[in-house]
Image 1 (cartoon, helix red, strand yellow):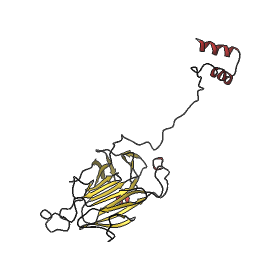
Image 2 (cartoon, one colour):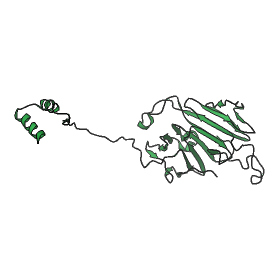
Image 3 (cartoon, helix red, strand yellow):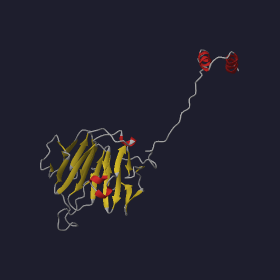
Image 4 (tube, rainbow, N blue to C red):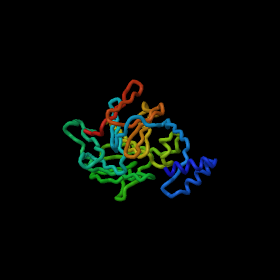
Length: 257
């Protein structure tokens, strides 16, 4: 063929490789000679194990405690499962007969939380009031400080903001934005064994449960994954289990009774 004949003629004239390439590249546009180079690919040591499960809500269970994970920027809280992203369990809070006297100081839609990266704004939508460190938000809402006691009617929460202090050496962490809010954790001050984690970048579980020190949950591209103390990364999918000492962390679908 014409290409083969052209190459043989160039070889017979003892042209160098570069001269052959230059000459061949001057042929009509449909003929292009590409010089090959060797490429070596080394797998990243931080490759995530398992397959992804796209969701912005999951639940972890550990030692009879529930850790509810949400990755949404706008969250509604209250006692109505139809209206809210997080259902505030109210039955029997501070009451003598829990089965007969549900707590109605929490409204069906009690509050909304809005995250924008630099701060978290809380809006009161309740009938009985919402207070942040004993201050009631006005109609424009109120920013949640890095550590706060928040009251929904009779229910008191401890809320703590986690911020990205610096970029970590791990490849998966390098997209974290320094000084930005990465998560908000809040737990009830009564005996209800539930923890709510609003995760926008990552959340260190040891901040709320000391036994889970060095376990970190990440949220990226509508998927949750976890980093273990051994620096292994795993996607979180319903049905996954992880061993922590003599206990097991179970990953389940998000559900609130």
